[in-house]
Length: 421
Image (spheres, rainbow, N blue to C red):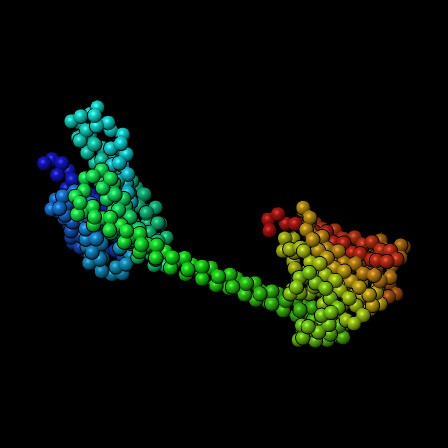
């Protein structure tokens, strides 16, 4: 008789825990009237104790009690009823898994033969103590339970799946009872049939989820590809506009006109350029497009991510344009320019080479000096100018050098990789 009283008391504590956690998780949807809270605790307590008292310790009682508990929550929390059902199913799963786990562990740990008549009292006492410990832990870590609840709310179809999953521990307990042959034949058959139906339903449902998730994954891949494509178009557009501005700023109107024609018709003169970047959207290819013409061939190998440097992309772009424009003058508007970039362990390296005239030995060390000019470079409006080019590169902890012979002139820019990028 005393055990029944303790069972009733534990059931009341469970009901209080259920309602408290549900109400705590709902935040703005909390029940204001204390009478409704008390009524829901009473109904859950009657459900948890009376069904077992009426039908005995049959496994089917677990399912009936669980289902009636969901109905009580449904009618008690009438505002936005789906959310409290999720919260109730979550705390119910925690409690039922805890009770079944500790019950089985304690049953295995206790030696029935050695304890003889005392086994029942010790077992029951420890099970009750484990539930009291669970109540304390749930109250202490209620914020963690609420976090899990919010995660479940973020998932699509979470109501259906959390309710389905919350019945899974009920089946485990039922199978445990069946394995020890403590279930009547009728109850056992009902449980087995229900379990088979439960498994079939989940297989069919999760197959549908798998198909939907695969479709969503495929659509996300297409969307990501389109976003990258749009970003490349945007970057290409911005740099093309910058190219036109630079050419006009340097009074190179014919070159600006040629570039504008190529922007309008992207396939015009495409035979004069080979680009590793098939879309032609790399910084090197964009910075050399304006010089492509019948007598000038441009070869681009762009393998570097310039965002890894501390230099602004616009500044680097104008530096490359300046070097390329100087190369075109040295080539006398005829020949080949090879532009490449790559990353080594700590740096990004840019090489811009042309097959124009050799830079004389007596001036090659002066071309980066401020105010330096030659007879072939009477127009001093060349963007940054080579002296400012070197100054800007060195300001970003980089360096630039030039080598020239009868066959090739090559500018090499080395920029350190920004470790924080």
